[in-house]
Structures are given as C-alpha cells and as structure tokens.
Image (tube, rainbow over the protein chains, first blue to last red):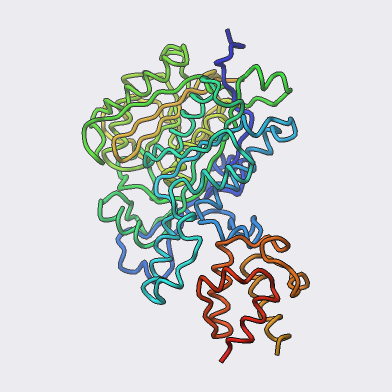
Length: 413
Length: 79
C-alpha cells in the first residue's frame, strides 16, 4: 500500500553548489550545460599538478549573519544554507512539527579541514594561546550536522555518517531508516563539503585521482569519456526533508518525490580502489531496488556517481549494466558540478528528484568519445543535451574511499 | 581614560559577538545581557590582550562579569 506507515516522501529540497546558490538556479545551470569548474589563480597552486576546482557560485558568508558565519567552518556554512532552504521549502516549521520528533542526518567526507589547517597555521605562527576557542566545534566531522540541528531546532537526534564520498547518500539512507523505525516524524538529511585548500588538493593529487587538464577547466570533468583523467574537487551542500507519506499528506505538504528504497554494502576489496567489476556497488543497487519493491526493468534513470576517474567509472558502468540493465538513461552530473565528496550523494539525490519531477534527464557534459569499455558502450548515457523521457523510478548511487556503496531509489510523487 | 577603554572594548564586542556598540555599557553583564557565551569570552580576552596589552588569566576572566568589570581590570593592569 502506498499509504503505509513505511512510505517516505521528500517534502523539501535545498542546495548551494558551484552552479548556483539554490536549487532552482543550480538545476537551471545544469540543464543549460554550464560548468562550475575554473582554474585556481592563487600563488600556492603554481607547483600543483592539478589546479582545477569547482567553487561555490555564491559566497556563503554573504548569506549568513557575520557573527554566525565566523563561528562556522565553511563546511558548516554551506550545510546550514542548504538545510535552511530545504526546511523552508518543506513548510514543516509552519506546520508545527514537535522539535522532539525532528531529526537531522548530515554527512561530510572531510569535515572542517579549512579550520583545522587554518588554526594549525595560527598555532605555528602565534602559539597555542592564539588558537580560536571555536576550533574544535568547527573542525569536528559532526560539525555540519550539529550546526544544521541548531539552525532548525531539531531535538529528535542529530547524526553524522562519515563514509567519504558516500556520506551524503548514507545520510539519506539513515533518514529513511529513522522514519521507518518511527524514531522521528521529520528528518532533514544531506551532505556538505568545503575543503578547497592546498593540503587536500595535494593529497588527492598524490593519489593521481585529480584531473590535470589545467588548460581546459570546463572540459576537465568528463565521466565515461575515453580521455578522462581524474575528478575535479567541488564544494557545496545538498539537503532534503523526509517525512512519512501519511503525515506529509495529512498536513497538506507538497511532495517532490518518494524515497522508495535504499541499499548499502561494502566492497571488502581495497581501501581506495573500487572492485573492478563494481561487485559491491552492484549489490547496493540491487538491494535498493529490492527494498523499493521494484524490478530492475522499472528503473528508468540513474544519476551515476561517475567521478571521471579512469577505474571508478568503468566499475560503476558494469554495476549499472549488470544490476539494472542497458535500458536505463544514465547521467553523470559531476561533469558540471565537480565532485562534492561528502555532499555529492545529497546533491545528486536532489537532481534525481528533479529529474523525476520534470521527466527530464540532464546531459553528461564532455562525453565526446565514450570509453571503449564494454559496459560503458552498452549503457545509454545521456549526452549533448538533456533528454525528455517517461519514467517513474530512478536510482542515485554513491561510493566512497573505504569501499562504501550506497544506492537510493526515488519514485514519482 | 576609561572612555577610550570602553569604546575599544565595544569594538571588540562588536567584532567577536555582534554586540551593538551602544549596548556595551558598564552595567551590562556579558552573559545575562549581551548573550556572550563562554567561548566568545575567551576570544574577547585574547582580543583585549592584543589591543590593550593586558593579559587576562583564566581565574581573573572568571571574575569579569560585566563590561564595567572588564574596563576596571584593563585600567588597573594597563602598563
């Protein structure tokens, strides 16, 4: 029964991204094929092999009260901005939901790196007495979640999954579980990341994970393309408000989509390399489809994790082909947003919901020459321009260093 | 001059805690009236040290309850 207590819907959306300061402007830029990627011009970047970044379109400090902003790490600032948008969009506050029944699940991959590294500079240069008393609450990995909880007055539990680039998606899965277990009536879920700084850039570059196509910033993130050479680091946040369908209906809330199912697995294969055939990824997708009570043939669209790394994209293509099939319309929106790490799964779930709403699959930018890999060749990857299609179910999958795999199934409202 | 100290302190309070300068008057309690929390008090103490060259040890900081307390402490200990 679609009205059962376990039926969960999305009633609010929020985002601040390299493409726009909110959901509407981000979606419009995505569909228009605009890129959020640019080349770093700061002096420090001169010796770096990878010099590209997808910076926020809107400065978060301009959107927050000055004193509030200075006590929040940039990862917390973007979390609060996206979360407050989603909260307003849901209308839950006006509906008078009891704070004790409101929970938050907000993930991050790296956390307050800018605070950690910035305060380390203070320590080295000025000594321990000059280190800010806000250092710890700004750098802790539950910082974005805690800041969001305070912002919306959530008292039903505030949680912070940390699973690298699967964190945002994992937060959504936890939110679904909390509602199914009746531990909350409304859950604000999402992910946030803001770690553009020499150290993370150098670390990812040392792994040979980042694109070095420095002379062509907008062409650098090219998932599934033969000439892809790594990801582009992005910053931002995505947020969704989840509620049980019966409660949402009872209060007359708008429903953007249903969150019909979720699946999570671990590769058990390597700390950072994905399983070459996407074995764990495939199991997560299959579990999510099963959890949604659907068959693979029901899934019409996949917003792929596809970060533009040589090994990751082919492993994922195999997982999608083998678990869902060749009929599905695939897109890789990181081609325009860059890779938002712990925020990626949340932002791409926002995109998946909008694709369902508009019956429109965004194009994968820069996919000029699809990889020769058999799975990539087999899939119908949308490119050049968005494609209109009729579909009632879509998957968003996310994977993280550590072998974390999360898949989410959304269906039309 | 206590007026110089008061205006200097008001600048710090505005920067660190967003307190309007007109509200930073001697009788005001930091926590009760101005909503300054304990972590912000630590930041204020550091800023006072930078601005006035007056160190405020933690046990002294605990006794500074009002803007007036801070002004007298700075007055008394300034070189």
